[in-house]
Length: 231
Ligand SMILES: Nc1ncnc2c1ncn2[C@@H]1O[C@H](COP(=O)(O)OP(=O)(O)OP(=O)(O)O)[C@@H](O)[C@H]1O
Ligand SMILES: [Mg+2]
Image (cartoon, rainbow, N blue to C red):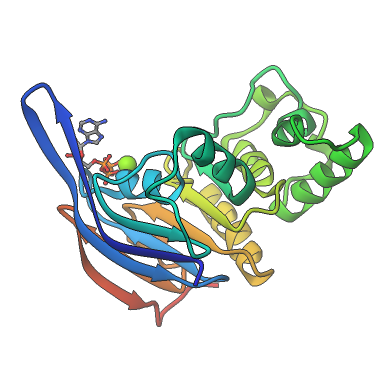
C-alpha cells in the first residue's frame, strides 16, 4: 500500500472562527494508480493535497506513506519526506523565471551529492519524459508558453524519481487544447509506472484518470473506477 488515510480531519482556526475543511477522509491508494480528486471550490481538495504531500499535518486521523506514519513527523522529517518522495506540480508552475529550463529542472538535485554532469543527464531525461520540445531546453523559463512551463514543472517533479506525483489543478491556467497536451503527458507517465494524484474541479480533466474520488464539504462523496477513461 502506497498511501493509507484513516479518518483525516483538518480544522483551520482564524481568530474565533473554525472551518472544518476535512471531516473524516479515509482512503487507500496503491502504487501505480492514477487518481483524480474532484470537488467544487472550498470542498477541501487543496487541504487534502497538502496533507498527502506532507506540506501540512491533519488535525486528527492518520496518514501512512509507504507504511510509515506521517501524521506524527516533525517539520524537518516532513521536509525530508517531501524532498525524497513527492513531486509537486502546481497550477502556477512555480518556476524561476530568469533561470533556463534545464536549471529549473536540475534545481531539486542541487542539495544532493551528485555531480553537474549527472544532474544534467537526469534533467534531460526528465524533460524528455515530460514531453518538452528539445529546442526549448536552454530558453529562460519566462520565454515559454503556459503549456511548455507546465511540462518543465512536470520534469522538475520527476527529477527525484518520486513515489508520488501530486498535481494541484495543473491545467488551471491553460486553455483546453494545452490542457490536453498536459493530461496526455501525465497519462504517459502513468503508463510508465508513476503514481499520480491529480486535484481538479473539472470533470473533463478527471476523465483522464483511472479512478475518481469525489469530495464535498470535506468528506468523500464517491470513489469509483473511471470506466470511460480517456486515452
Ligand atoms: N489557511 C486556511 N485558513 C483558514 N481556512 C482555510 C485555509 N485554507 C483553506 N481554508 C478553508 O477550508 C475550506 C477548504 O479549502 P480548500 O482550499 O481545501 O478548498 P478547495 O477544494 O481546494 O477549493 P478550490 O477549488 O477553490 O481550490 C474552505 O472553506 C476554505 O475557506
Ligand atoms: Mg484548491
